[in-house]
Image (cartoon, rainbow, N blue to C red; front, side, top):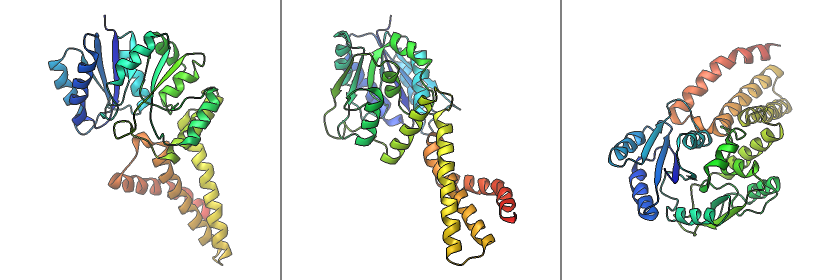
Length: 306
């Protein structure tokens, strides 16, 4: 029987997988463990690297997802495909310290339900304050991506957790508020700072996730984000419209400028915030914007002509 399952949701992590496996093997020793890598069809050949590693080590498996995207759903996939009695979720970019895994396992053996690694200098004190207020806790890093728990606790919670949610650890603690959580502080330095996201994205995604939870899951986080961007886009539209009219432009020209500005704003912000896991970059962004503009132009013409 496998004792521990290490679940790694990865994207373009080919160079790091081999060294991460070696580090885990060194610190876990005689523990029966498996490595479940969930790859979102990385163009750098991560899945091929994992499969090659699996040919050498029987405790490695690869789940390659061609269509699905997103870290939360990748973790859900990995957990449901794993066999271990204990689940450890890590990032596959080698910036998190495998040496902390035995410490997490020890914390669980001491009677804690969840063990987590708290990052130094987390991205947003405001985000942490909002999460802790919602959880009714005082966690140093309630948005960590490096944690361990029992398989039974995770599987018991997964039906309520959102596959497109903002943070799996937050979801896990949110739906198990009576759980005993033990935080272990990662040391400061390059290995301790684990891929912190831009503060604006964190706050926006967190807000959408909380609104979704308040709705009982009826409004998915992505829908909340899309509607929220649309509301802000309406404000942009009217701001440009009245500013243009104030400068003496005729109404139809002001309306056209405001509509096009809001259209570009909505597409760009949704690309960055709402669809961050499928974000268009460089040439694909401009192709997407052009296609969106062509499709939306029919509505623009109708709007300006009325």
